[in-house]
Amino acid sequence: MTAVVSLVAVVGAICLLDLLLTFGVIRRLREHTEIISTLQATSAPPGMLAQGETAGEFEAVATTGEMISRETLLGNTLVGVFSPDCSACAERLPGFLRLATHFSGGRDRVLAVVADMGGDPEAYRERLEPVARVVIEPQGTGINEALRVRAFPSFGVLDESGTVLVSGLDPDRTEVAVPA
Image (cartoon, rainbow, N blue to C red):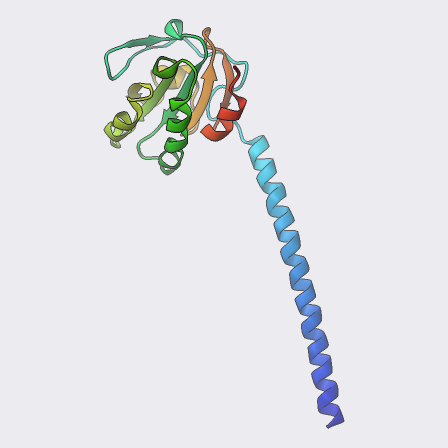
């Protein structure tokens, strides 16, 4: 009987030690996850031109027939670039719509570019037109090329000369950094 009690005590001690080690590993994994998330957020390349860079010359026709070019930008202009086949675009579209609705200067200072890559750009056009001037163009041309878009969705704020004041991949983070 003494041997069974001793054996149970040893097994219990081993289980307790294993449990403590498991909790320690879980704690370290959480710390590493936070560190990796922070590094990814700070070191991710922008999806378009970075702060301080200037957009190239461009001319485009909005879906409503308006002519849009770098010279027609009025003050600070919010820009969002989307692709119909992009799941992240669908996920971040509500944030862009919310930001565009409250952006200083209204619809005339919001530009949404939808890259026509074979998906259905009309669904984006319908949702974006009430709050933005919408341009649908082939990927890698026009405004996409002028802003050197490398990822979808991409967001930014351009001043009247076409210089990027802020850019990023998340409209909610763009909102915080929008200059007055």
